[in-house]
Amino acid sequence: MSDYNDNVETFFYKGEITVELSKPKGMITLKGDLDRSPINAGVIKALGLPMPKVRTISRKDGVQISWMAPDELLILVDFKKVEEYMELLEKNLKGEHYLLANVSDARAIFNLKGKGVREVLSKGTPVNMETIKIDDARRSRLGQLPVAFWMVKNTEVELICFRSVTEFIFNWLKVASAPNSLPRYIG
Image (tube, rainbow, N blue to C red; front, top):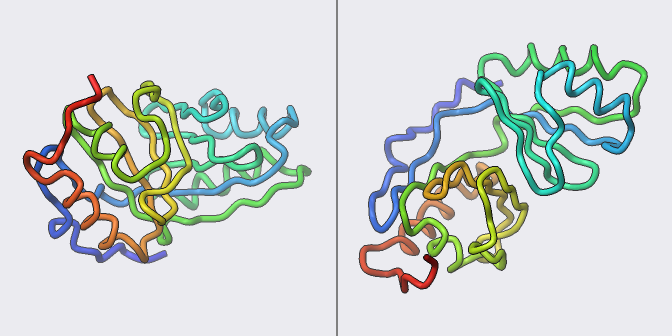
């Protein structure tokens, strides 16, 4: 695991919304049959959180489980505790068929804040941002690039992308949130 040497200060912009690269988070992908009770029980025991419903997140005390697909979860934890959580999950999923991978170094997370956050994202995602509620999560795209995002508050979204396109996504978000660029159609 790297020390995450990216200069996060260079990824900050304040326009119609604030766009900021988040500090590194530990990210674990879990793939498996999420309908199986033993897998659900193992995840709940290891993380102390309920399983998220379809297209939602569950979170508590710095740990988050994001629903990504019918057979996939993205688990966010403290960056320095990823291996500890991986071991906990492996222990609690013993005997089950699953795939567990540390993807912390492969992804970047942006924090988007401001009243126009829904409108900014509406410029590039096919998701109807008017229907998104707090703790809703979507795996979608921004322009032609894959992203996932979840609503933290009515005016705050966390957006995840592949690290290799961090600069492109940041520049896209800057342009989309330029001053006086929002049509103000989402109330």
